[in-house]
Amino acid sequence: MKISIHHPVIHIVLVLSAIIGMIPVPCTAASSDTLISQKGSMMDWTDAHIDDNLIATYVSSSSPPAIGVHHADGTFYKSIPLTNDATELESLEISDGSVYYTEYDTSATMNWRNETVYEYNLATGKKQVIYVTNGPMQRVTKIVADGDHVVMRGGVDDRKLILYTRSTGSHQIIITSHNNIHGLAIDGDRILWGCERVDREPGREIHIYTISTGGDYIIPESKSIRTYGYGDISGDNVAWVISAKEPNYINGIPVRSAESYDMRLTNLISGKTRSVETSQTAPIEVPFISGNTMVWVKKPGVDYNNTDTGTIRTYDITSGTFSNVTSGVASISDFSNGLIVRHKLKPMSFWVTSVTGNPAATLPSTAAVTTTGKGLPGSQNTPVPESPVGAIVIILAVSVGILTNILMKRNRARQI
Image (cartoon, rainbow, N blue to C red):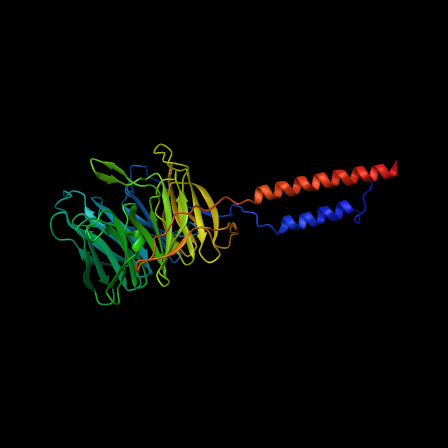
């Protein structure tokens, strides 16, 4: 039987198809993955950072020892040799056309070695010393830089933050903590770090320090026994992470759970903090943020034998949408302007994943929003629900089949 396009069945199918077409269907966003380098083993000390589409990488087994700089498309740009075969790196950063790194002599014992922080200008090839440790157990274990500011985490047991101003060549100690300083990030005039609570209560907290004013702001919700002290900052937005589970107590000492996460987002202008996504099984990961995009790695669970099981999640702050952009990831090293530097451990390799210009999954975000500080309530943990689109599509498809079958039978009966 030939059915006309004016047949009632066709009209019903077209109407229902239009309804289906208006429903946002979640998808996995396409991504662009580029291999930057592949060498070394899981036992090597490795690091990688990105800025202005240039990636600086280091693997401790490099021979001769050198920092490799690549373009974001994977092509090699430049090699920065270390002083000699007996030296090693402690930290690495790239910013505004310069590479910063901490170098030390491996022949000296850790407690007594001196460490030197260099700035290497990629355009001119000029290398200069910007800081040298002095005294037992002094180290510089992390460097972050932006514009005129270079911040070094160092001292004994990572308890100091030293600010180096490039234009003046001067140094300033921003903070001396009574315990370890954890995460460290910078954007423009603001520095983020995490440390044990300054009021000596149990737990950690996230600090936002403004260089121009010397003001130190603590995110109120971050004052928690579940806070790890790691995060990132971009403009007025701060991404940080907290455990979704309460800690276990061993001999009265709290031990934070590494088997869950609650990704948090704080806006410094509104003072509001919200829970972006919560997982009760995925291991804790450091979130990164650049512009209006927040990224992190989500794994099915803690598995020390299988490291490359993560999927990169992105969250668009403006639209409230999520995307999964690539899988088979161990962790993220850096994120800038839509480019993620990530790595695998089997084999040891650095990759760049682009998340710009790709379709984002339209998922409803029902994460709780609360105001922070000034005695207002703390934020709640509300996981993002699964999209009901799949069930709706199935129901509509079944409806189309039923109606089509009924009308076909009626038409056949008329012909008989």
